[in-house]
Length: 142
Ligand code: HEM
Image (cartoon, rainbow, N blue to C red; front, top):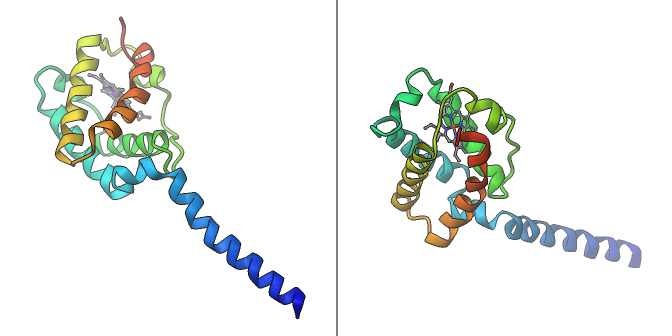
């Protein structure tokens, strides 16, 4: 009986601590609205990129549904969400495109606009941007 009681205590401890741990770990992902929120942000972001005269031509032959899905999974992973990005690495994905820093900055600006429109707090936006910024070395020619 005592043993059973201990077992029940242990089970309730495990059950009550598990959701807690998950919440603490994916707080940043949740600040972006989880998968539905990120999907909405990426849709709006890519729609903005596709009409942005500074960079839209790069995407003329792109597979847009694939690009969006890869961006959602990449951002989800960067934000500590339950995803693993399995797309091409950034150097490989952008090789030979001739992306320069002006293009990189234009795209970053479009992402910030989409995050603004989705109501993502400025500090949370910066968290994602800070994780994307170092990728410029792999993506831009110079
Ligand atoms: C931090 C900045 C960027 C990130 C995180 C990013 C991320 C990605 C990802 C995840 C993919 C898909 C890879 C795959 O399909 O396996 C991709 C592809 C692509 N990216 Fe970027 N990218 C960035 C900047 C840029 C810039 C500045 C441009 C051009 C202005 C650009 C143009 C493209 C194009 C054209 C594709 C290929 C789409 C296709 O062929 O279907 N990216 N990018």
